[in-house]
Length: 593
Ligand SMILES: Cc1ncc(C[n+]2csc(CCOP(=O)(O)OP(=O)(O)O)c2C)c(N)n1
Image (cartoon, rainbow, N blue to C red; front, side):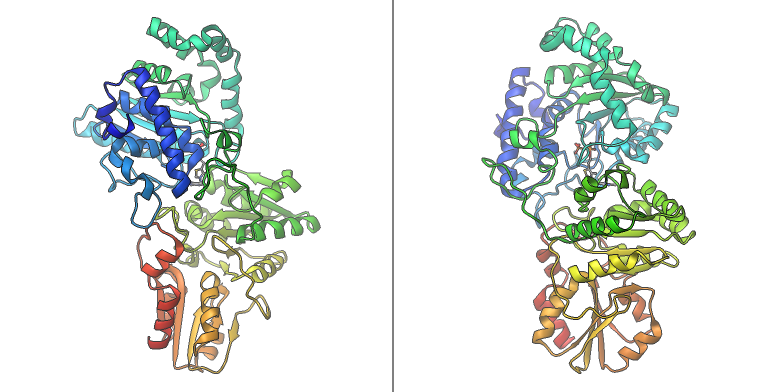
């Protein structure tokens, strides 16, 4: 059946039984494909029926369907003409792992970062109404994404405007890890509320028959749950649910009943992350994002020595001897290497949910309040806390530490996730100190040094393996010159250093490890640079705002950076090559200019 589905029109006339068969075929296709490509497995297995129901009930692309983050939209891609391209997902030149407006007319709004969907939906409602369109507006947002402030900002306006909209809350009790915060508890209450349990017990597995018998009694059931969900009602959104997100009949009936309500509604849908694939159901965190794997076997997590793990281990060591050390994460405990910290010091890890703005401001006041907070955050997500960096951290000179993970090229997640802007946007934050270790020794030394550092500090490091390159550390608060008396000097830091140290062994140039990126010590740099005929500055950051651009304002240097703009998806090697930053291109550039 799956091979005949080329657009949402092809599912409109399918019977319930046929849709159920299609759902299981899609699940199998997802597992078989992701085995080869990798991708966001658990979240996608959880949204198969939900996506089928949405495309059955609504008429995309005329009706607007906005997906939050977009990592759970593989079934949507399959149903909207991209089935045969799924095996290129997240690869160089292939389809995106998220939604992109230019990839399909059915992707009305692209994303990658969480919690933009409700604000985006609001904009479409206003635009469509203003131009006389009478289409439906649907947003799908996860319970994790709902922890972000933008969702509440948008609901606040939606409630006041009181225009027709359906917010589908895809509640699987998980963000990437377990969901946190009071809201998560509140949603949990709904699952376990006497009302829901009683209704489930009354209609039980026969809920579907109940639906068939009379839609109006199902409607009553949907509204019985108002009690535990006053949160939405108080904001002026009408709450319905919860419904079983893997029961197509329930889902379709609920959407049909609610869709013509004149104001904004919330349909609370309960799903299971990893649904239908035992290993992923058992460990949805591990299967949230996977590389290629063998579906017949459980993935065994190897011991990692990436930058995140080195950071996490070192922070545990520091916290043991200094009770001021606290860790902060915005829903990224696993990704940022803080799992061990969370087990060792559960009360000293503050997970604020997908709320980067709060994470930055809270870190600032924790620091002013006498603690030593380490905010571990991906470069790309720190973008959301930019105002807070200036207004709360810098203005107060708060001695907090930003531990910026996934700096530089990140790879398969593409444009929305590249960490290629951080040197640029941090460099305009007044008084910022920005350090970039090239390896394990430097990262550990910088973290150690940070304990007694009393100004705002950002330490940035890339995704992936943390090498051991240091032969001589020197004073970690200063930059380091590797010299063989050449006439060309290459200046770089962090991620690019591994490749450059390799080339240094083979080619005729000196190398300056500019690990203290900011502030610039112009006097010292002037002295160093004056000994060379040519100075090349190499970085995996866009040119505007880069170290290279700053140095070009003072010295005669040749920049080699990433191009300004967006950087697509692909492996780090492919992307470096596309930007002339791979080993051979670097060699040529250094030799020939
Ligand atoms: C602003 C931002 N912070 C962090 C992330 C990383 N992230 C991607 S998916 C995800 C969990 C989202 O949970 P939920 O919305 O419940 O979706 P689920 O995967 O459970 O379906 C997180 C934290 C992000 N994409 N954007």
